[in-house]
Length: 193
Image (cartoon, rainbow, N blue to C red; front, side, top):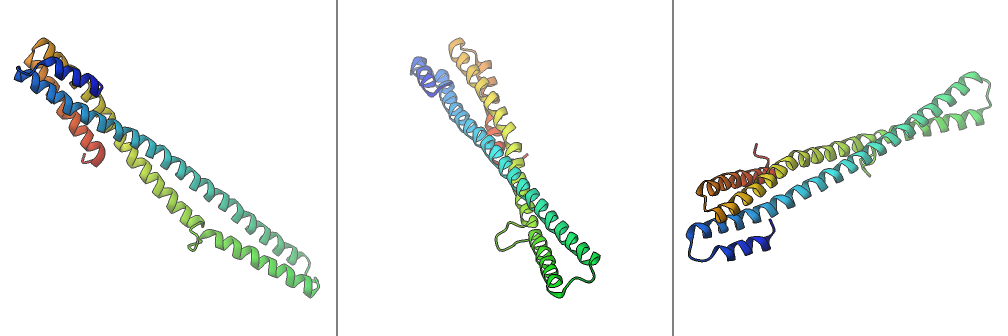
């Protein structure tokens, strides 16, 4: 129910009937809570999607580092095998091979952890896990907002019908359902349970 529709209901309910005014006021409050729940649900899904993308990017970067690290390890091993096959290699060539082997091994080792730029495999894995945790938190929030929206919409309908039909049972059913919707909204933000 839109805010304008709520205002029209309040206007139509008249000013003399306190039960109708109470219903209209309850509808207004529940409409506000519905807007808050809708906003929370939308934000939770956006955050879940964004964090999922960031986690996937971190894992892809990790995998790329792993592939490069493996390539350097293989290149170093290949050069070591070439050195072993040619024991009579001249000193200059042997020194060049040994220097290249050392460079490859250092680079492969550096890919394991790069705390200065936080782009080593170790740091990337931590980053990916942090993004996953944020995504999972948002995913735990989202259903509560969905439940809240459903309960609040039904509560608003019940309260609206209670005004038209003058049925106190519908008012109380709408109020109880609206209260549950409020608690679900609160839990969506705080994850108390």
